[in-house]
Length: 309
Image 1 (cartoon, rainbow, N blue to C red):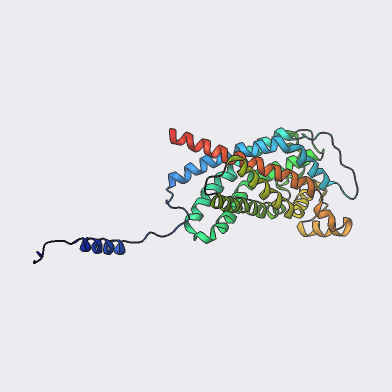
Image 2 (cartoon, rainbow, N blue to C red; image 1 turned 30 degrees about the vertical axis):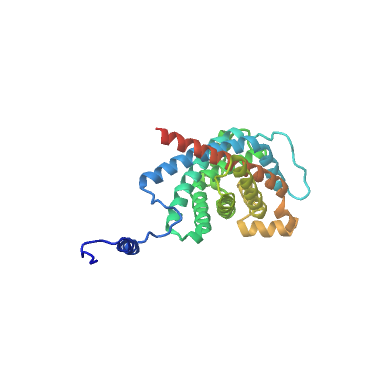
């Protein structure tokens, strides 16, 4: 029996479909499947700022006494004793600075991370997290440094209130006094922020792949605690240097970072660079647990509210 030239056989349909699929343009593989629009990035910034502000304030309010003990341990010279009174000294003023600083940090970090993940190959996601953490830390340092200077000088008993601290620092040292130790702050916080957030994000990604599901709140908190404790431990020497430079005031005991390091090692021994490591690891470990736990929860709540609206 002859086959009509117009008749289409099943095999022809399959071959035609395969050819069409083969000729279709292939989509590039990316870390984030959907390209972010400017509106998406603004929404991410907003959600990150709200979540960051909430997480930062909760951590500072809960763990401030441990931070005060750590600062006093690092500030005292030789074998001097620290005072355990007034562990909440400067809390109100610190919260006033931490709220916008944390909002700026996470508000910058989240959209920067998303943009970098779009741009980088998937196997360089860790570099995207490192870079976003460092950028977030650099931008937020404009608020974080004056907050840290005032906080630490109040923790060491130099001033009775935050307004007095700001007024007297500016009167004696000029506006630059509020940014004392700025270089050492960046030396500590840029690697700290980069490493902590990279560790957290990478561990979270690995955990999700292994569990094949979204993480629960306690799991986010546990990963945050681990990332915080590890990062806090390895950056302790940088924290000691930053503390010494920030609290010296107009005495100018140290002329800069290198002079500070050499003076500490020569006069007090190299072990001094690890003063307060126990309190720092405890503070940042628990703080990381609270911060990242609150951060992820608030991000979920804000995103859910935006979807409803």
